[in-house]
Amino acid sequence: MHDFQYRHGELHCEDVAVSRIAKEVGTPCYVYSHTTLTRHYRAFDGAFRSVPHIVAFAMKANSNLAILRLMAREGSGADIVSGGELYRALQAGIAPAKIVFAGVGKNRQEIRYALENDILMFNVESSAELRAIDEVAAELGRRARVALRINPDIDPMTHPYISTGLKKSKFGISADRALDEYKLASSLKHIEVVGVHKHIGSQLTEVTPFVDALKKVLVLVESLKAHGAHIRYINIGGGLGITYLDEVPPHPQELADAISPLVRDLKCVLIMEPGRVIVGNAGILLTSVLYTKEGESKRFIIVDAAMNDLIRPSLYGAYHEIRPVREVPHAKTVTVDVVGPVCESGDFLAKDRAMPDAKPGDLLAVMSAGAYGFVMASNYNSRPRVPEVLVKEGQIHVIRAREEFADLVRGEVIPDFLR
Image 1 (cartoon, rainbow, N blue to C red):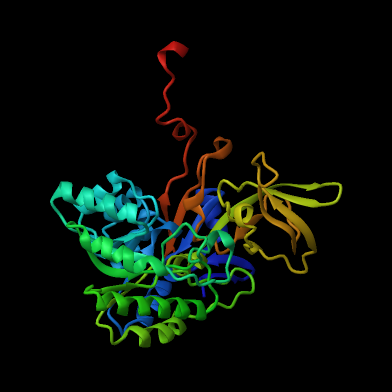
Image 2: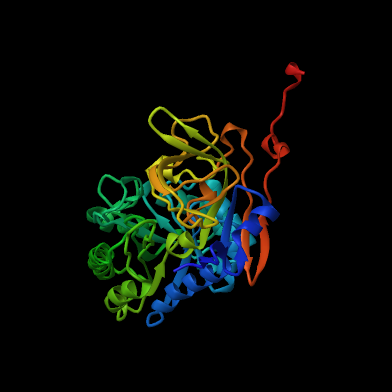
């Protein structure tokens, strides 16, 4: 459920007409609903109230400082994958004791930064990483808390690019090597194994893969305990999907009802890393129609947003519903490609889409753009990145300013020999 609804034929974000945002902030821009964000977080957190748990919001989905501050005020931690995300989390006021650091390629500078800030734990993905963390921790005279990220080889039945728990994935440690990795970790003086972690993929629309993967992990936990491990945390990752088109993903309560009984008696803290399920449908990309064009075999609607603003359609072939901001009664439905100004054939937001016809100056809302939207934006074609807006109680808050041309060359230097 989200708070982008039509009122008297005009799309609103909560109580604010989206056309007003376009007038005051300009297009393209990202628009987020405070009410939706809060409700989604509370629905997820509340679903697991029967077990000790930490919600570690997956910052990769949306890392705007204002969004992170909202999450922090709700009690959320953070799932991070870089030193930059750690910096953002700390700037937003997220408690280090609720931060978990994932990713296959943590460098020593990032490891040091995380240890200096005493984060909760690292999700470790290889023996080489274990040794690197041990060495950096030794330099600092500390012990690093880690969880072994286990690859349970469960097919999440999602897009190959966001499937992370199969044997061929770059992520995690295979389940049959986990005990050996634990023995290695136990031999390292500056490593403390406190948890087990798994994450099998993103945009999952069924509970079964979560349950199957967790059952495999729990067998491993029992084996680790038999070898003297003191496992205090079980991290089930994230990945719960949202509705983009006709998906019917489970409600967080359904996930909790399936997961909680499996861990209730283990005397462990459950860690979850939701991202998309909280922010995905809480945001839209607002864009204006520049031109329409009749090609030899297609009609094109050319808008001012492009693949550098929202790359998911180009990268994944992902579907995003596109709605007119103003409904036109009895509008003619046409089949079009919605494309942007970027000089690439892959620059599209929709292909062969049946939708109400549009004309120059019309506003369109690209739905379900709150996750993996702005965070994946670039300056390709030297296009300034767009602003982000948070709507709360009838007020429009610009939480990231639109970049200017000068921002495009900030940090670049012409050497003296070219002057």
